[in-house]
Length: 347
Image (tube, rainbow, N blue to C red; front, side, top):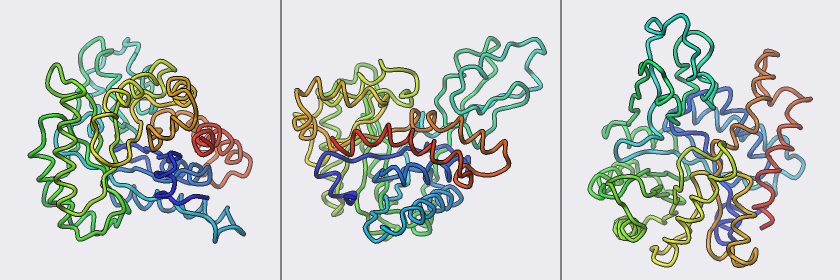
């Protein structure tokens, strides 16, 4: 199995995004165990000690399953996500269930991919990862979004405690100064990071164009280089939408095609709307697998990766244990995860 750095260099990198606001510890442990065994190179989690601990437990389970070839196994990096300002990845939905009319059909429940809204009651906060799909469908306008931004004073001590191999900063066009401040907080942790990932798309001021995005990334690159940090550019095509359908795969590829020729040095990774349709579409557009590998270092899967395993995670939960402890269910989960991950590993 290739190391994370080897995978980045070869264009075969795969990252699992657990969700920057996802605090469902049991689900995170299951996801990290199965996708580690499936071969991902990095697991991206919320900046939360309990979440990081759950992720590491899942990874440890996977490495135990890999015996006796454990010596050859390359464990994934743990990546912690931060933001330099308001961001949809760092929010949760909220409403007061006492205000809901008794006859409300609860369309919010029907559209929630995280199953964070049940037939009664409020949003289950630990499961909500901020996709926002419930906000416009509430017929009474009762649902609000609540930001989950980490305070400046907490960043350095928290990272020093979590000791991730990589950190990702979600940013936007026009937030260069805020990014620089957040980066100083990361540097104050004293960690020697393998990579500092920068996640950015075309969100932000009205009319943002790829050229503006590239210019902003060059500014971020100068700051990273000054701090001796190695960048990884995550191009966020259509945030938190990979589980919606095949059409979302186009957004990430369009953004890559526009930014790649003018991007700063460092590997470019697809994200935002990525799913099982992304690689076949990418190969067709690039002309060959070799050309595709030269254009992007790899891919990150979020919503689609979670949605694939969610039914089995819930089935195990109903049986009273985690998915990783169910010898009938976890091999089925692994087969599904490998179906998503393996094509990129063999790209």
